[in-house]
Amino acid sequence: MPDGITQNDLSAFWMPFTANRRFKKDPRILVSAEGMYYKSHDNRDILDGTAGLWCVNAGHARPKIVEAVQKQVKELDFAPTFQFGHNKAFELASRLRDLFPGDLDHIFFTNSGSESGDTALKIALAYQRARGQGTRTRLIGRERGYHGVGFGGISVGGIVKNRMYFGTLLTGVDHIRHTHDMEHNAFTKGEPEYGAHFADDLERLVTLHDASTIAAVMVEPMAGSTGVLMPPKGYLKRLREICDKHGILLIFDEVITGFGRLGYATAAERFGVLPDIITTAKGLTNAVIPMGAVAVRKEIYDTMMDKADAPIELFHGYTYSGHPVAAAAGIATLDTYREEGLFENALALEPYLADAIHSLKDHPNVVDIRNMGMVAAVEMSARPGAPGERGYDAMVKAYEMGAMIRVTGDIIAISPPLMAEKKHIDDLVGIIGDTLKAVA
Ligand SMILES: Cc1ncc(COP(=O)(O)O)c(C=O)c1O
Image (tube, rainbow, N blue to C red; front, side, top):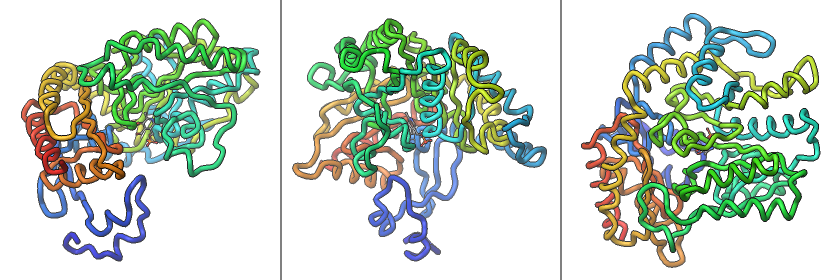
């Protein structure tokens, strides 16, 4: 037990997505953070191989963001955005409009990726109705998709454990197949060659349900939480074409891929595919204050303004939508990304990270390695009859050796802050190599 902490102190907090009983017997307590490192309760430096939880993209305790938050709390701690407004929310929305590609010009604020997902789905339904296509009520997701934990997100999402305990979920939801194909694509750097045609699975659902019943398709351009699955070359373009052909909205969940993770402000930009709606959170404020944002194309906003019910066009919002302190953090975060060229750094380091991580190919139990931007995954084979156990042990071992990694089942995922340098990649990959041996 860490100094000064008793088993009893740990019992009240029901930890999210955590093996509570295991954790509380052998806790991993973080006490401070700066730059690329956490400090653990036993005073060790822990290299942050995951940018917290895919969110601290600029690194920890960045001065500009800290100062902006401190100043904002003093000046205007809270103001509602229902029927009132404050400058920081408008300023951040304008900054995001300028940053996002195409005519993704209008921003709805939320507090998390889950809320962004549910918000996007609701906007899609309300928009279809406003434009006279009210029969389009069906929502399509993808197997292995993760869109947070709201009922919309878990319904459209495709992760069995996130769905199976929670009843019948939303009705009228269906899923296209996932894009993971190790037989053809194992050990690919960047986008795999094989699998553009996986997008045609949407045609199957259109044939089954008819396009006139489908409002939107939601996918992560690169699926993160399910274990880092890259889109095959041409896949997203094909998905866009099929959506266009049938009047279906395309939603990109960019909660992980937004804000530089793949070397650009958005994955939409990296892949040259413009969705109708983008959901974000995490890196938006560098995770300093929780916030999410949903960007919609001009046509959607204009239709809602012209054709939805008046005077309130969208019956949706959160008490903290556009919270002033979060908005101030967001503006300072965008400044930090730009001033330090962090998106560019992620892109420049991609080949280095690729070579480093793929050097682990011959380590024990490695069945696939994949990477893109500042993200990489090492997939291990499961221990017989015990899926996920090797992964869990790897997470614990890596922490003991001084690095935070993330595991999904038996897949190790890394996504360091974008300020990472070669030496951090070397250290992280070195620890992962030792970890693979330790859990063999
Ligand atoms: C793609 C994606 N969407 C949504 C979410 C949910 O975000 P939050 O945990 O902030 O609700 C996540 C979180 O990891 C995510 O990766």
